[in-house]
Figure (cartoon, rainbow, N blue to C red):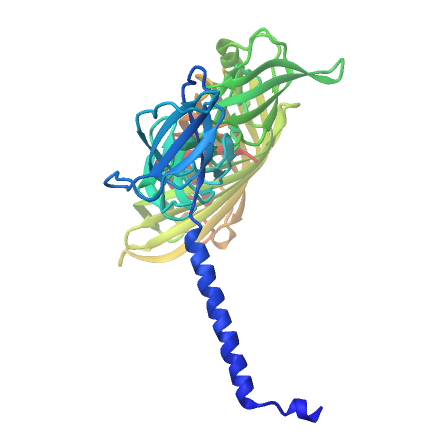
Length: 552
């Protein structure tokens, strides 16, 4: 055993050379075999049968590609029928046929005919015939084309055309797949054939497929403004071609929804509500559809429809009332009055008089409540006013009021609102030194009293209207006067005219003219030259009145 392990080094080297030579020989043999195996495809020939022929001989010889001269040996095949099939390499060939009778005596050869054996037709893998390819794109989507390899092919000629011929693409590729960006929402035909060895496939292989666009966005149904519903419309969906809808009405007796109208394909974005349909609770079920696009999600909207006459004339009569009775429940107001104010005061205690003009205005906010079940309601208002007097500065003064509101109709178009309550007001009093004409002192007069107002609202139509108003403020209590002097009989008032426009269902805007006078009088004290005389502070102006009223 020891002797076996101690092998001769020269013998091991010889074994290595032997194995190396064996591997090289196998490689050369495989390469030679690979060169000898060439691509062949099945071909079939058919000719006119010859009378009394019992068999045929077919002679084939391959030709050179360019010169058409014979190359290689002649192949002879026998067939008992007037056709033959077998495997041939692609390329040009020369063929002739002769018949043999029952004695096996051959006839004359036919005239040689030259033909070409082309490449196999391409077998398509994807897209296959009538494939629906989905995409999430609105414009273009990448589509991958795949096919089986064809023996002898060096390249593949591809032709892609949309069925409306708006898109066309031709190109040659060497691989067995390709990817292209195609416009979505189209049907396509694609054709392919192999090329190589100076030959091409006998036929173009073609398939048709559809490339779908992204899902259509759901339409938004617009809610009717009121119960006088004559049509229901919606905002069109992008890429939608038509709409499918169903109109239903709820039957309260049978407690189920009943179909009134159905349309699987409507090009319009609205539905006409038949005037002969009864009133009640309605529902519209809708979806958008598009050519070669996924339909939208189904949307629906429920709404009430008035029974009886739903004509525009009937709606106008009903809605004109809404331009007056537009508020129920809580509501807010906001207004601004702006003008050049006239200010004057006379103080007999200190023998001071003053008259100025200055730019000023009043901002107003309010909160109220009106009920549809009662004519009564209430309204509270806060005002902040200011006047800018050249050389003396800006002076502000506040006011507020709260009271009941009573509404009464005068006609289908008219309404009177009466206000009754209390108020609080402030006014500045400027004391001037007549020797220096300088401002000596500023007093803030504060007083309260009773308020009565009346407003007449008239609707021209469901949108436009007019308003006239008059408000009277009677001073009853002096809350702050210089040295607590006694209040004298005085008051304030406002009168105005406005035009109104119903901006939307729960909001009305007004603009117009107002004249306003704010005045406070109080008596002089014992130290005055003439006790019991009246001191007066007044601000008045012709205002541009901007007003807004909205339901909360």
